[in-house]
Length: 469
Image 1 (tube, rainbow, N blue to C red):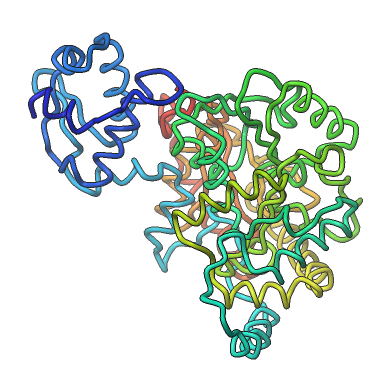
Image 2 (image 1 turned 90 degrees about the vertical axis):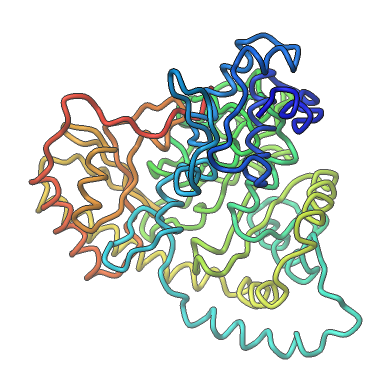
């Protein structure tokens, strides 16, 4: 492809905030994903494209290198740069997280402990859909497009926040298609290419994927983040942190909210796991929004009840909710109305359901910890007080190569480096304990076999390229 031809296709690529190489990479990425740059298309040499775009060669080199690390282009000495040659090669460009790739390529012979979510709907979910049918039949004069969510559900979610000591009206609630959808909407609304996002290390890999999709730069901070400054957004999992299970103490919560307010940085509290506290343990502190009304909160029913119930929400100032609603209207006009009616029927009884589900979750946690202790006594497996994952440091080797070995033995787990934007925690793995007892016992047996057969490489196996660029 001639440099001038690519320059024409790029259009106003440099319009936006952030380093030029990120803006350029973002526009080329979009052309590849939209099919305008077909697989195996040769791209202009660094110097030629730089001249056509009137930028330094280093800008083009950095953009090409970033796209190469993502799997979108292939660079070879002597043969130049080409668009990745097949959809299989290009797939990691959409997501590099093994948690998502295991969803895209399920294997019936593999025990999936990489993605943590209930594996079947409880009977109450089925009953809620039945209860929603009469309400659905009664709808009249409603075309079903509600970008903010149906009023019935928005009101029910707002009431749940009020019961937790966080005054909230329905105008401050946006219903989403789950927690991941909420993250993606917020990333699109609040971030521009090159923006810095403060994240804990380790953290939820889906959040890193959403921030990466917005071409933002995750900046690794300790769990709890500490002092806030110099960023476009701060993201924290304050209760039952994913993946460690940590719970941020009340004083640290207040200090974090006040620090974000002083710095003028939006603070995003991911509460998807907040209600999964095991019975017999202390109740978690008040949500971050109780310490500051400007905190943006995310919630979801998917981790409490069932992953297939794609109902989540955002609680935020009314002006931001209105902005997010307009953004959502552009993409899909609104969510699934029957699912929202079912969710509205479930929320009044959610505390009772949660109490039963967390008892089962604690039993699963205790079973897996016990099984691993018996079969793998050399592993350090810290217990948690809620949530759904174990964060395990391996006594030797690295998480990426062991995850590959475990997969060959029929268990999918997550290597730690994929949860760290700096590429650290290479010696850790994340394992979900959300599965039936017989499945967890079999998973522990397979993991023990994998560990016995594991021969660590002389050098750590590289994981995905760090998301901080």
